[in-house]
Amino acid sequence: RRMMQKSGPAAGMPAAGPFFRCYFSGLTGKNSSKSGADLPAYLPAGCWERYLSTYADAEPGHVWAAVFAAAPLFLDAAHQTAEALALPVNEAEVEGSLRY
Image (cartoon, rainbow, N blue to C red; front, side, top):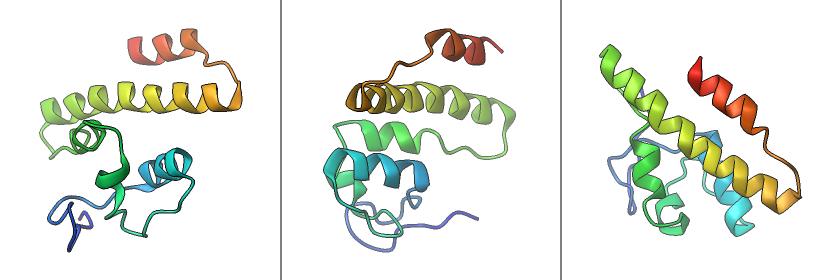
């Protein structure tokens, strides 16, 4: 059972997971609320919608669609984090994971 937002711009949407609370902190230098209700207001355009597309019901096709929506979203965050920390991203590992 997913936690849902009770108020704010994300009311009725799934609560943000730890990945996005961490991403938000890196983007803004602030900590988000426990439920992440304030995240949509601070994320880059389209990012919240991309995050919501990673949620799926138990239908196998929907689960795979969510996995393939999550992979590029995670990779974008990894690239931003790597750039901020002056670290490389292992592109061969990324490609191998997606191919697997």
